[in-house]
Length: 456
Image (cartoon, rainbow, N blue to C red; front, side, top):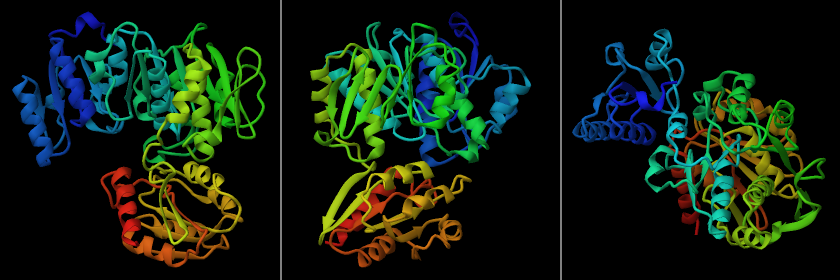
């Protein structure tokens, strides 16, 4: 990696003109780099962004990547959505040009070493937000950023040496890190996801565990005691390793007994009663435990943690109680984009055989056979929509549960409501990406809630 003092007057290429690329380009330009931004899209929004960058003295190309644009580059910073087989990355690797992520670049310049990094297949955003709320309640200066929406590098004007940076980090962002070292690193879980990008479970797991790669003996690693992949990774770590679990644990950490969270750091004591929080579901109990453990490691008092957790408002589209109509409860879990998240959702409802489960969207080259055992005694009807509906129909055709296919969200909600009775749950946990029909999972969830509301 280029040393910090060498960036000035060096040609740095940024691939991607979304928020990460934009913030990275502006950051580099302010520090004297000769910045070039390349973008495959040529939409009106991209052209407008390019015009703004050009006004700042940043060179741009849109509508495709070219090798000529890369000539003479000292470093490439690809946005998280730019895959390894893209021209900029292939070209950089062929010419031995260093390739790093925005997270790595931000870490190199960070004015604070108090970095808390959180990753996992599911639960990252809730855990990151809740951790930020705990630190805020304690009066600890904190910046919540990363994959959650606002970039690490875009937060620099707000950072001081005592600021705690609470980072949500995806596998895409971790792939291109080299020296990144959080003093607290948390891995919530690992389950099949993003095979369209990583191609195998091994590659995906390798990307996730990079969060711990540079930690030393005075750093902390937090992992899920109930997760097979987490426990395998835990055996390889050099940092102080702590766990959270929905059952008893050996060693130090946090565990759940019934509906109560206990700390096992210095003796055993009660910290949180899950039923007093506004967060619902199995996945959220794990998110709460991880956040509480981070808070304790940061020196936050138990009473302060309780106040923050009990007052925390759940984020939209994550096991969100959307409505109750004629006794039918509608749950919006649009953020569910993989089988593991569907399983978490199903484990959060009782065995009453009263759930209408809505699944579908754009598949990420993942099988959903692992979900079938969790239908038992819970799901009475499956409604499938989107690009993956035929694939899911084939996977589920022998599961013993009626299947219905829908062509739109309106039809999906209508079928679900028609087949539900008072006391039933309509659970929208798609398990797939949203990009076949919607801009993102937020738009998908909002459309679901709008169609549900129209039933009134």
